[in-house]
Amino acid sequence: MGIDYNELAKKYDLTRKENIDTVNRFLENLSFSEGTNILDFGCGTGNFTCALKRITNANVYGVEPADEMRQKAIDKNTDVIFEKGNHEKIPFRDNFFDFIYMTDVIHHVPEIRIMFKELNRVLKQSGSLCIVTESHKQIESRFWVKYFPTTVEVEKKRYPDIPEIIESAINNGFVFLKKEITDVNHKQAISHNFLILVENKGYSMFHLINDSDYERGLADLRNDYNKQVELEYNHGETFLWFKKPFKD
Ligand SMILES: C[S@@+](CC[C@H](N)C(=O)[O-])C[C@H]1O[C@@H](n2cnc3c(N)ncnc32)[C@H](O)[C@@H]1O
Image (cartoon, rainbow, N blue to C red):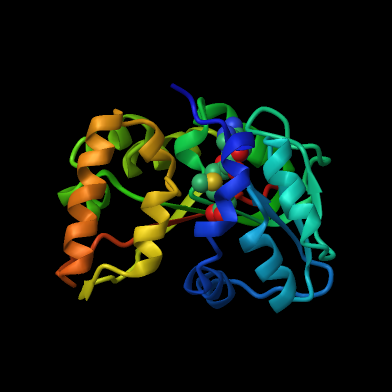
């Protein structure tokens, strides 16, 4: 079964928003000014896109294939330009962007090789690319695996692991700069927000496991939520930084 983001758009913003730590990490690594062109690739409902527009004075653009997701982004009424596009076609001219990022998108892209070629085309020489994703090790250590163990295999099938991403980017013209792993390591009771997220299938993986696995996991999660059971939060995210080399 594929994921229909036109359908998921109805509830997406109920359970998902931008992660301000991610936005801050972009700001720590790069400096943006009035003439800087930034692309949020696979921008969804524009949560990260609009946050960057609020915080910087750069020109911020979002590209998103699902019409219903993109419409939600447009409805946020910011000065961001949202266009339809995907890994095969990003509707901008060659060498246009100074910085391209994608959050939680790469596992939806059927052919990352084609995506890297297209990203390379629209990125300026010396421009930066940041991919925010999770490694297979991080997928295995998500705290909710306790409730939904069958998500691990489902997720490892669709998430390219870190070495595969780096190799494909390099083969398609990028220079690999660095890998950053967010340092998450604390104990916490299950939050109400997380329970709501699961009840609304706010992560696409919940649409990919079978109904009985989902229902069983949700019942156990509710039980632990009511008992305020503390869980280890330690999976974090991976930031992969690349550059398009400068050529004379
Ligand atoms: C989990 S959502 C993330 C949205 C947004 N980046 C965020 O973090 O809120 C994944 C997004 O990737 C988009 N997507 C799926 N296939 C894509 C493709 N081939 N190229 C670009 N984006 C794609 C989906 O439509 C969806 O909006």
